[in-house]
Image (cartoon, rainbow, N blue to C red; front, top):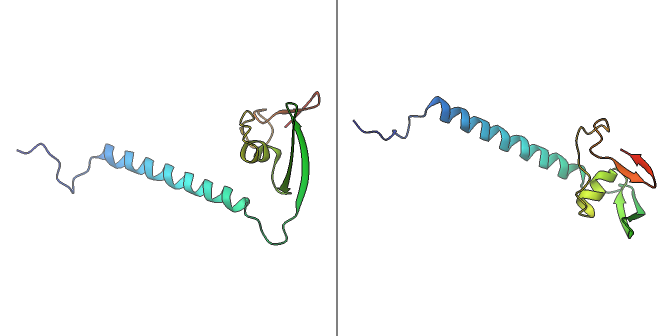
Length: 104
């Protein structure tokens, strides 16, 4: 009797692992796609020039008015200390200090 599996035989464990990997890949691809679509420069999209002083360094950049401060800090300035948690300001992961005041 040959111990090797035939190409058409798959165990339940292998099937479930493959399904989990496939689902994770699909959901992450959809998330990346939705993030990318939210950042597309649309004709007529409103932008603003802003200046931020972060840790004694001044940054001036043009931003889409739909972007959050979290997105600007992490994706545009590469400052990844601020995290996205609940996406609603309830958990405090995205808190930054504006002057001496914490802001979500």
